[in-house]
Structures are given as structure tokens and as C-alpha cells.
Length: 418
Image 1 (cartoon, rainbow, N blue to C red):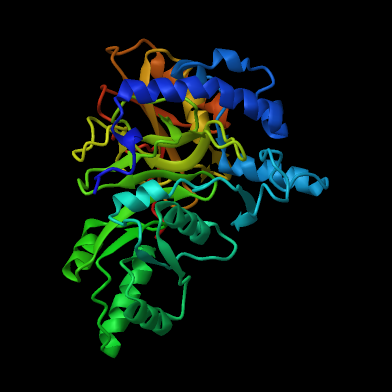
Image 2: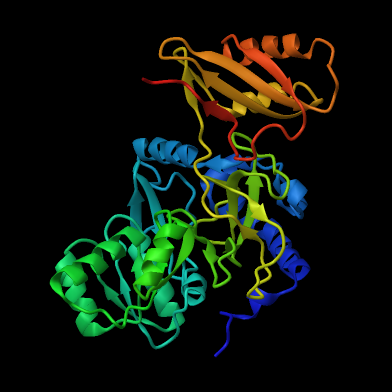
């Protein structure tokens, strides 16, 4: 049996990049034509010119809070519940609609494996003809449907366990003997512990695919000790599958159906390989053609290819949230404002705003990396820029290149709340 889901996974990287970039102008053109929201957002963009990553990086990033704002605006006017981002309406082309907190509504199309989950499920060890116990929620959020449609595309049968009713979950697994579990790691741990408590063996449960929660090595080792090999999948309700873990356990391999960028938080500027930043995704989905969608998640690209032979880019996995908006002396300061300040000074390579002090005594220090030795008047000029952009006073500390941590933080809240 093959070790790969399909031939796309082992393409030469240049072949993959060429295919994605060839599809990019058509996707941008379609989004602009068929999506009222993107018709407005991309009104000054010529899709035929978006043929490389440099051109893509000039397009605006649409972040989740903006998606919600568009949806709230159009809904309040009796318009599209999707904020004008969906290219299809209710009916045969949209069998289901889901809701995430906000609420943000997400459409589901009719394409086989619409959320592109089959590849990740295969990488977790599942094969056609197996039964999968799916314990993701089937109501409101799309997680249950994501996994079920992916399992069906792989040729598997699904037991829709959903959440809750732990003893009934144990009974179903004991009697149906599924090949494995899909859901959150915390819920499977509860199921396994309940089975041990009531004296029920679950010998068929040897593999699992997890998503929706962190899966640290300590928890992975716990499952291994209980005879279960678990692998992660990184997905969102807006985009579907983004990246997945393999048996190499060295980061997550990016899905074949998305174009990934890592950008500096608060901006749309791509960062260097290895630098932590926000995950931004462009999908080739015709129903919901999200172009440069900012997930709000932090990650970084890993150098080299996966040891399994999969040739796509790898990322480190989820490393925190990119939205570091912080309230300082009653004013909100955003990562984009820090970037705005830094860009006024070409000699600045990187900037990080440190907020310190105790409650009601906030202190701001902007640490900036520069290769210049003692740049004339830089600190004072940047202090003036801080005041101009944020309307707050702050200090500036000049440090050598490489001094600031590579953790994706643009604003660090180091205040004491005792």
C-alpha cells in the first residue's frame, strides 16, 4: 500500500510552486468577479498581474475580525450572511452552513472532500475500508462535517460520535471496534480513562488524528503508552485543512490546496524563512475564495523537506496568537502601529514594544534592532514617532541585530498584575 495519498505530495517544489502561481491570477480574478466583498477589496487590483509571491504580498490581508465586520454590516442591511465573501447562495450548491463564535457563518460546498481533510487523515494512518470514530462536534461548527467528508473521500466509514456521553462513547468503540479516533486529544483521554475505570477494553483503538487543541509531546507519549499513535492536523473553520503531521513528527506539512505565507503580525509583509509570524492563507476554493486570509495564528517555516518524502513546505505548528493588541494607559495599541513606526526608519530591522510596570503605571519601551552604530538622534526621532502614531509617550532602546526573540511577538505585555 502506498505511503502517500497521491502524487501531488512528492512533486518537485518548483513544480508545485509553478502550479499554485499559475492558478493564483485566475483565483484572484474569480474572487473579484463573483464575490461582492472582494470586488470592493480588490477594486484597484489587476488579477493578471498577480503572478508571483511579490505581487500577492501587495494585496491586503483580510483578518478574522474584518470578516466578522463585513458579515455584521451586510446582515444588518438584509444582505449576505457571509459578508459578500461567498460566491454561492443557499440551495443545491451549499448543503450546509456553520457558525463560529462571533457569530461568523461559513458555507460548505458540494465538492468531494470540500475541506480537504482526506490527505491529513491518510497521513495519520487511516486507510480505505476502515471505520473511524469521529468525536468532533456536529452542530454549529464545521469540525464534525470536515472530518466526516474527508473520511468518506478516503473511503472510510464514520461513526458520528460527536461530543459528550462518555460511557456511550466507550460502549460504541468497544462494540464497533473502529480502527481509530478523530477529535480533540483531551476528549479521547477522557474516553480512555473512563474505559479503564469501568473495566472495558478498547483494543481496536490504535490510531488517532487530533485537532482543535494543543498536542504536546507529554500527551503524545501518554497516548503511545496506551497503545494509540496520535497525529495532529491544523485546520480552521474558514479554510479547512492547512497542514498536517506525518510519521516523521517534524513539524506539519502544508496541504497541497493552499498557498501559505508567514507575515509579520499586524502587517502583510512576508518574513524570512524561520522567523515566527502570522499564518496567511490563499485558498483555491471557488465557493469561498479567501485571498490572503489572516488566520491570527503564529507559526514559522521549517527548512528542508519532510523525512517521509513529502516535498511541500513544513511549518512548526501552532505557536500562539498573532493579535497582540494591548490596552496601554486607556488606549489600544496594535501591532500594525508598531510596524508603522518602524517603517519610518529604514535603518530599523526589527521592532518590539515592551509594556511594563504595575497596574495604572504603564511604561512603554520600543526595542529596535539596527546595524547602524549609534544612529544620530534615532532614539529621539522614534520617541516622537511613537507619540505621533499611538498618542502615548514611550522610550526607545537600540539593540544589535539578532537581539530580539524570534517568537512572533510585536507587542510584549510584561506588566505585573499582582
